[in-house]
Length: 117
Image 1 (cartoon, one colour):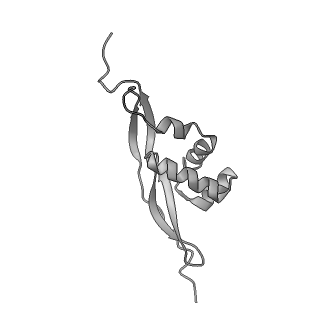
Image 2 (cartoon, one colour; image 1 turned 120 degrees about the vertical axis):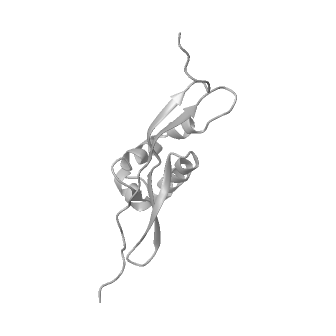
Image 3 (cartoon, rainbow, N blue to C red; image 1 turned 135 degrees about the vertical axis):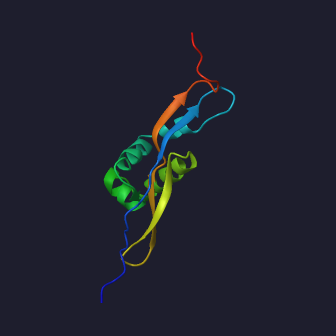
């Protein structure tokens, strides 16, 4: 009898086209601090082509699952990635699948509309 596990259906997910990060001096943003981490940048790079589980990401970036999980939580909090699916391992364990939340991140230094000079 064939097992129903592992179950890895295709992920039908499209990230937002653009996310703006506004640096205005009055409200702090954690996004830039989170992105300053080499590990976070490697994780984002690993997710560029397709969604992955935490263990797949850890393998791709050659880091421990604990380290990757820490950075995944921070990247989710910053709304740079998001859980998009649940897959199941051969043992039936649920595994969250993560994907980039946005295709393009724009950092702006003002919260007002662009002004003509």
